[in-house]
Amino acid sequence: AVLRQSTKDEPRERDEAYATIRRMMKSLEDKYARFLTPEDFNKLAKYDITGLGLLLSSDQLGRFIVAATPRPDTSAAQESVHRGDVVEAIAGVPSSHLTPASALEMLQGEEGSSVTLLLKTADQPTRKVTLVRKNTVENPVKYKMKEVNGKRVGYIRMKEFNAASNLGVRDAIQELEKEKPDYYALDLRSNLGGVVEGALDVAGLFMESNVPAVKVTDKTGHQSTLFAKEVGKHDLIREPMVVITD
Image 1 (tube, helix red, strand yellow):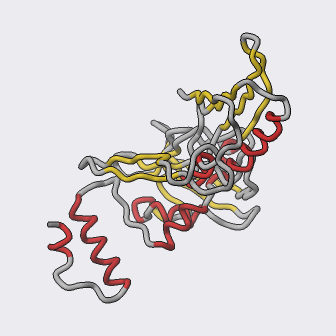
Image 2 (cartoon, rainbow, N blue to C red; image 1 turned 90 degrees about the vertical axis):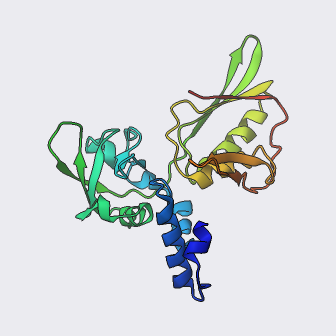
């Protein structure tokens, strides 16, 4: 019904098609629903927000919230940014005027450049913080061999999903395989989340590309499926693996 009401005439140009889709999205009255053009999607898929030490999400009011405690070695941590802080403005532009894609674009920049945020921490006064961009992507993976009940366990700890996650896990497995583990433990406790594409890349190390990795269900019950990425061999290990979460 929504489709019929929004497409009385078939759109002929891309801009017309986008306008029609936006009308359809608005009629859903779903505050979590977003329409992304292919260009916006590519920005979200490729962008790794760890350059500032921030991981943002939206709350029920549509505001941008700092979703995780910044890592100690980041600009956000040095400026005492806290989990739960509300980002009221980015570079002087109120967050209410920004889409997730445009906010991410404003947070991007050259190595060593800076961006100023207006933050609200709980009952404290609103304050400005200037963060310096550090665009080198940190390897979020640590690993070591452990002895547990007489068994050799290849322990892999991953604290977030970013552009380096795939290679980090692959390297960890290749090194641990030399020590002939009996099984593996992939520890995702306190994982900060991160880039969806990074998570799908990691899934592709263990799963075939036609196997569902994530299922997302909206408020109407409609379910969409994301599949593991094709990243080469998906059978790097033959030993059993336990995934630890919290």
